[in-house]
Length: 409
Image (cartoon, rainbow, N blue to C red; front, side, top):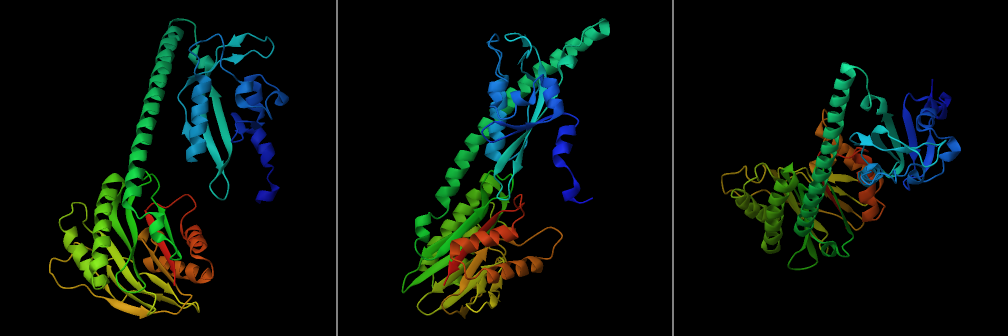
């Protein structure tokens, strides 16, 4: 049976449980039969109406928190695009046949996003399981015991919800600090200026929006020249970001006074030996001379930059590759190579999160990148960067950090 033969609207109505669809404005888009039956509402009393107009808090209960808790959960789904399971809730419902009479009800809710092709939340799935009878179970001795245990469960669930909320607030504060740190350590957009360059930065899923990948674009002394670099520190989060900031700053300073990219990496490699956490860090740097139409480059264990010539020919800059930054105890100079280009070429530097996939040879990822760059080479730098990320990164986000720099030459 193909998708066209499935009546998804009919399937939704027959789902074994209470399920409703909400718009991002929290207006009911639909509700299945079980939802309407258990809530005691007709379809016209629900669909098209604002959630909390249909189900407000009990005005006779000053401690009622169901509406506030549900609103917070739905907002988290809208903000993060991720599923949110709520603790057991007491959320009283007005008797539809007796206005002003409120029924004590208990619910176990889960809220989940429906995403469009761009990852934007377009609908919210609100699924609830009513557990009122379980919580209010009464009867003989066994029933009394069940009542005590269920009340204890409800109390502990409320405590867990409060703890989760405190953890979310703590996580939000930590994330704000991390983002401020990240922004302080990476080049400001004004440093990219009008160089027809685009930068993209994508931390791994669950990495607090900070990571150890970095990029840098600096003006070089003498002529119309810039230095473009990317690097990768092992790990994610604040620790990796701290090491990243030290290495990026050191290479940025070294590039401004070095005779070439190899000398800049020599200095950085010696510095990496005394930085805790810089083990196995990689970097590649390129010096672009716009007057001479040349690119000199050197790599310390990093994937090779890609030069797409104006005619579509792809050249990997892999003729000056050396071990990672701290892997060379001897003072021997690092290798350096150069190549030429004509106007209209494109240079791409990136980190391995863009091309590496589990159970896949790295050459496959490099070929995929080269084909994408060549296919979209006529786009401006910003559009080209977006197109490459769209084609190469998994829809739900990468499991490794990713940095990408595109320079139109």
